[in-house]
Length: 571
Image (tube, helix red, strand yellow):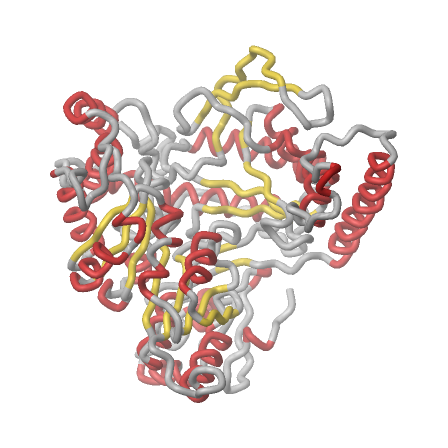
């Protein structure tokens, strides 16, 4: 690992490094926000912990160590990865030459002969990438399942006779495949239990569809109850729900910002956020991922220089970040972002799609994880599709904000109301997490997830894999790098009854292809051990253990934060 200038404090002091190649903080906080560190009482900890606390608490803004790992790509692996893509590109052009002369059949969509002089409808490189690189490993995606996406799933087998251009079902079902790909963080995607029972009862009473918008005749009592419950769950004044998580971002950001506004967006923000900020018509400036020095630099420049040409002050400055970044597994440096936001009087838009329910001692997301005040976040966004096992999204915050969006948001005014059984699934699962159902099942699931994440990440690192992200993130990216290993890893894992998600360019940088594991509270310790054993076996087969910072296995694998029982905490 190397230390970039962004990882050094602004005053130039050397920052302690954590052993085993783990970076406790990828980017340091600026000097102006570290002054309060001098006023903090000195912590008493063991010598081996001193290094972690000194680097991770960062000026007193953090109430817990903040540990993230982003090991640098080995030089040889990077060179071989570029060579692999280079060879694939050369053979792609050769095959395009053969297709041009009708020597090889081309299945991909292309322009009609009579439209050859038109401006191309398809982007040339994306089309080239799809037909020559993506098609080679297309069998790793869009696999159909025929069961509940719980800890294990049933996968419908399919085969291709034309090199993945088309697929045929064989009639066989691969049963009991361990599911490491679904966002079922708290295990609420299930067909038994109180959530399924309540949803079935509501379906019998209300039906499935509403057939109207909320502003017309589609506002059910369930919608009102759900929104009040969401506001209570998040600790804010008000909230409103939308039927689609993607549209929650893409259709609401344009209602909050427009011409004359400045949006500062993290470079790894989700596509829904990127689309939303582009549709808003605002000026967009992108800051390096989780880099607080870069963010402050942009904020300072925005305040000093104002708008281009006129130099008038910006109407508003909106910082847009995510709680957990779904490809990196990293957690936003929220205490530092809030400190900067207050210092420069900007607004903060926080997307908690992956963090709500999955982080924090009470499952209340990244704000709960850091022990912060929800009022410090101006716009809180999240989805119900992951931890709650439902669909849709929400916006929460001050009552004035929500009332404004009810009349100005396109997804509120024009979209059909959320389906009643989906609403009931959200209400029941959220009450379960809050303990309002009279049980501790929800809290046990949050604790089980936290324990599973720590255990799974630690074991992978001990095996020698390069793992990205925060130590408490349920999104666990494992680096594959080379294009040939993307398809090979997915296929070999499925052969051994493990379902995984593999990701490559353009969803990731070209040399950072990866497998992305999503850990769930529904996974028992036995299930995780079986999955880890197979991952290690396939890792040895494909030579994926790239890490140069070996971690010695600990004598005990128990976690003090959760139960270590092998039984699922889902009943």
